[in-house]
Image (cartoon, rainbow over all chains, first blue to last red; front, side, top):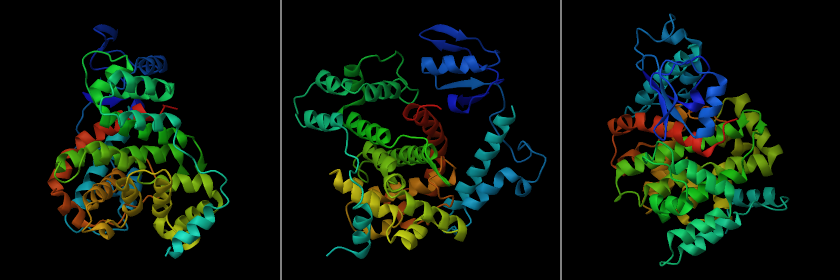
Length: 111
Length: 293
């Protein structure tokens, strides 16, 4: 199960939990999202919900069969860090998390 | 005596007939909040004079970030829940965001992406300020606004000295350099100086003048009482660029001064343990503050 914000949502994603508004069910779990659903969520102020899928992107299952350093989606991520040197581990940690986030987003888009 | 870059900045802005002014509703809000006996209803009445401001505050107070079990539908209740300080800071943020809200694009510089970056820095600064503790930063709300406005000079340059700014953006791309380096070469001043000039013009507090003016060279404020606030915005900017929260037209993670992390009493592990919350709140606040296109 993945927590998904409305801005990241796309048609075809499947709800993992029902969406409740003031105690009433707006849309049941298992429903595949349509453009109309997303417009309704916006009008109700629903900004986040749970969709089906794995939340963890592991090194082995990064949404691509390509090695990470050949994955074109990661080029802008590596480029961001090209002008600075790591002095205390902060930038290495941020680079690792930035790669994880980029892969996660790529996986969400593929769904 | 004025510095050379300040003279160049004032000369560049001399042709601008009217720099933006803060909306009347914010001045009224500041006035009523100066009265120690003011009620939440009176503050709510002032905010309700600006429907766009009121609706954004309602959206924020009803967001999952605050997590209240029932829907908040009145402005006086919103004021009670958020508190005067947070209402003041959020209102300033919303007013300034609205002043520069457009989908304009100048080469790499996209206004929507710019505000996403600014919201990312604001959220990160607020969360790290909270983690750092009240002895280091006076309030996390102040850190949030400082983060939101830190690059205001960029959007002002794009709006008011567009030709020069586009040249700087092109130079940055051609020579693969930081945008502030290209600004200095092309215009003779940077967005930090433009931002500080604007915050001075708007008579915003010295804290916000310092964070707009020194977030890339925080070390210049070392020894000052403002160093911790400038440091939190400096670190937040690095985190936001590194994680790809929007874009300020400069893809490179800025130069990092580790003294800033030490000043805040934070470790790399502290930052890492905050990232999940930062990502979640960033998405939430982007939804609340920027209208989905």
